[in-house]
Image 1: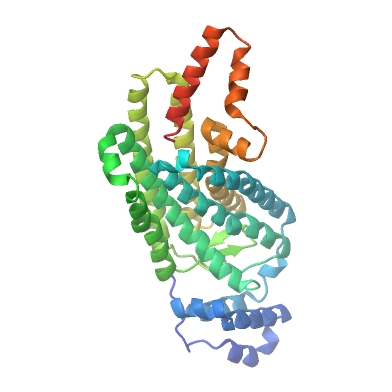
Image 2: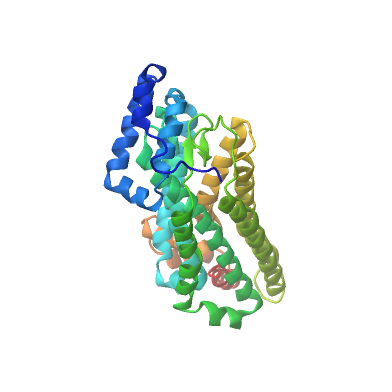
Amino acid sequence: MKPRPADGQWDWRENLTAWADMWSDQAKLEQQIIADAEATLLGQIFHFVHPNYWGYVHKECLELNGTYSQFTNPMLGSVYLVTGFTYELIYIPVLIAMMNKEFFQHACYKIMFAMGIMDIISLVPNALLAGYYLFVGGSICTYPLLNVWLGFIAYAFWCGYCSCAILLGLNRTLDFGWPRLAESLFKDWRVYVWLGLGPVGYVMFVLLTDVPSQFNPIMGGYFFDIDIFKPMEANTIHMVNNLVVTTVASILNVMMVSFLVRLYRKSSVGVSTMQKVVVIQCLSICIVMMIASGIYCFMQFIPVPVFFVVISTMMWQFSNGAPGVMYVVVNRSIRTAVLTMLGIRKDTKTGHLASTASGNKVGSVSAAKKDKDSDAVEDKF
């Protein structure tokens, strides 16, 4: 990881005074903005945890000489904003519906709810704030507090999200392969212990030991180095997280799908339909997560075109927003709960029976029974 200057080794005020003619007015303004941010309560808290980082910010931004503030991209910013707001508007009602007892009694829904909280918070820096930055040429040099804290949260929550994906994959795999073991490990309060020791503990570890990621308006994505014009060095924790965690999550998802195929062959539920649903829901999220993490690992220390950075950032956004969309599209129980909560569908049972009653009674009873079985199965996702 790139070394940060120690306290007292670099004084931005002295450098501004000695070489005042070399720095633009924008660079001088940015130095004052950073100094003011450092003096705030949040700035001092960050300084307490990472005492050398503000000096590094001063130095890098002064050397950039106001470069980042000149780059704006309203078109891409609009895409980020629309994408972020769309995901948030879909996801938030899903999380509210997920808190219903019929869902929250299952351990997998508790884990998915924790992932959902991380998702909607992560969408603020990686989509909404990123979109705003692209309109104004924002970076850590002009919005230091927002960048260090929300950039930190975005990075730490990505690591927590990956650990949640492993925990969810483990829960699902055990639930369909060894249900008794799954119940003994995840029943009731035990799942909260897993969440505390795993995702929450991992997030706190990253916040206390690593450096934040910073938005770069030129590339339209997040980097650990402020100055992208210098040779970049990989972030060790980030690399290990993306390479190891996503691999383990993929293995667990494949195992879970294998158990589901075997399970549905012995049940009355339509095998082909449910098998496709499971494959789409599990593998699509896993693949998107792997693509986003892979490109982000790659671009942290190897120069890549802006196009790759934008694709990676949008994949990151998609990995945070896609679960909410999939719950609505794939999971009938969640979809029904959301529509009922929004007042779009007042009485789901009556509406369903009315729709099936238009056919013959034998057919409607059979269809209702099959839908009931499907709902029971979907509750496990």
